[in-house]
Image (cartoon, rainbow, N blue to C red; front, side, top):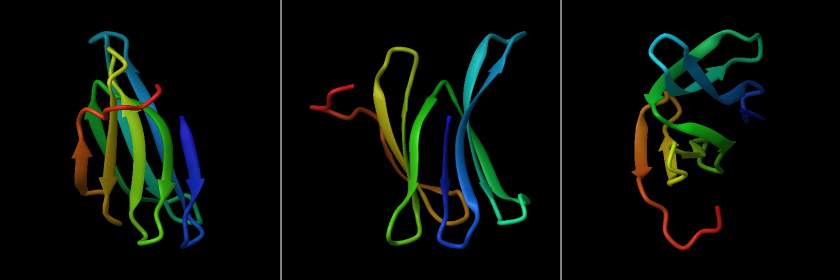
Amino acid sequence: MSIANTFDNGFISANRTLSINANEVKLWIMKLNQNGDSIFSFIEPDLYPEKIIQTSDSLYVFLANNANSHAKLIKTDSTGDVITFIDQLKNINT
């Protein structure tokens, strides 16, 4: 799990959900305003979140890996739409 403050005094969070019955893991990204109200959220299957940050252009970047420990980099816009998804990061130390 990762949580960070955002420039608008809100929060951005990257979490993991686990469905016991379906035995599946999902990445859950959630943006909250300063009162804790949800601004947006999205779920991506089979990813485990690592660190999430807000970039200087007010977008959000986070690292995630799948069950095989393949690292991925995902960048969303301010409404949670994915604008960059790098599926296989190379030359990194996981």
